Image (cartoon, rainbow, N blue to C red; front, side, top):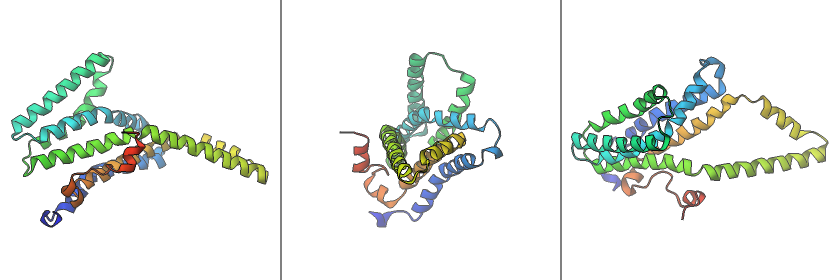
Length: 233
């Protein structure tokens, strides 16, 4: 019950959301002010977003390991899962990747998880469920991509039809102006997609420390209409 929750619940929410919020702010800053960043920033941001795929798998391993009783058992479970994932990746992809590029990204994800696994928690099962819920929300965002693409295409078609009708009625070339605006847009604005993804991740990380989650263990995106949007049964 919420009356039995510790008084630091909201500070935990803020702490959990701090890092993804900072990252989201960096992505947004680059989107609007790309000239103020080093030339290789766009490549770095793309690599970080690409690293999100293995990070999700590592996050699931981390969540499972949190439920173990001892540090040794947690580390054993974690590295057993990571080793299995690495073996599957090598069997599927072979060695057709640059290890010097991949290694820093993996270390960036692995090291904080290993440090966290050394810490003792009063409720291991709760900690495991919190970590799993955050990862499940992030995976749900990927599952929503087809729906978001379809909605985007429909909105684009509707916008073109509307502008076409207004252009015919008013004698202006609104579609031409829209085309010019799109052509002149800075590609750095795509970083806003990463920023939005990180903002939702921050909201999810904060949610798992809220009283409503501590009561029912339901993740932030566990909503009937969102589940329907992913075409799940």
